[in-house]
Length: 79
Ligand code: SF4
Image (cartoon, rainbow, N blue to C red; front, side, top):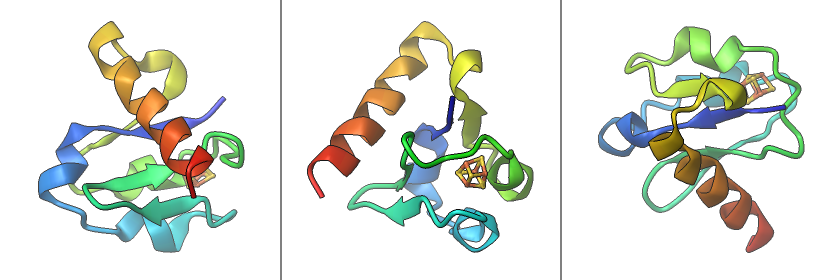
């Protein structure tokens, strides 16, 4: 189980989430920040500090948001 950063990050990239993550699994990508779903411990600290409410729990994603989990998996698979 993991949290996922959604489209709202793309115009903001505020980065508050990076400093609060206890396992350092949030990384800046070319278009937005990404959470490594294999490392995230589901603590919700990042969601609480995001100023644009761009972060959702994996199981709360709507069908059209599932692509952002896939994009995160691809981002970390290709690093
Ligand atoms: Fe990091 Fe916790 Fe957010 Fe997962 S839920 S990305 S562990 S701050």
